[in-house]
Amino acid sequence: MAADVSRRGAAHGGGALRLPPLRTVRVRRARPADAEAIRAIHLAAFPTDAEAWLVERLRAKGRLCLSLVAQVGRGIAGHVAFSRVRGGAAGLGLAPLAVAPAWQRRGIGGRLVRDGLALCARMGYRYAVVLGDPAYYRRFGFVPGTRYGLANEYGAGDPFMVIALAPDGLPRPGTLVRFGLEFAAAVRREGRGR
Image (tube, rainbow, N blue to C red; front, side, top):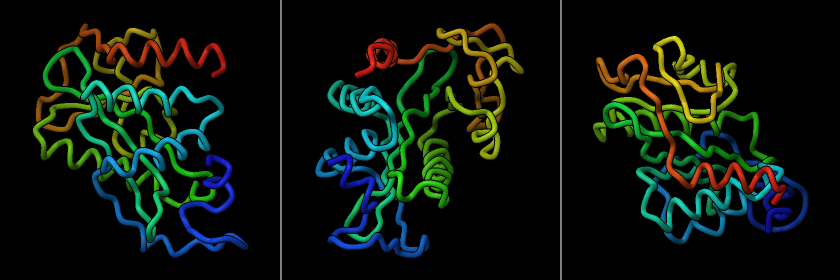
């Protein structure tokens, strides 16, 4: 299934890859029926199954606060998940974010992040964190958590980034922000190459 997503993107049918215009992308909340497509996207976008496994565990444990998909026609081209983090006020971790390879570098990941952050703010969350590429996440307003004296359980420096979703929404300096237990299990899984 992952190879199918890689070759044909979200479009259905055989033959040559023909991607519809980006304006046809609709970001919406994920539904239970999307689970298989979400898994396929994560398997196609990452070298191991750790991210797909993480999404499934977060969903099974009821820890996904927000799960969005980018829909193109009848297919799913991308997915982003937000789950609670511990440390300070009501915060969320953005992870994982995946876009089917055929749809990458077309703005879909950006749409998912922007729409997701806006919805998280409307839901009353105070801040969001991410462990990711600083050059990518800065465009959405994320800054290194160390700038505000925040730490994370993985000891990541600049890749640990934070954004306030509300005025005075950031945790106090010195706060250790912890992701859910499923994240540590996914990191171990990824290290084993699954």
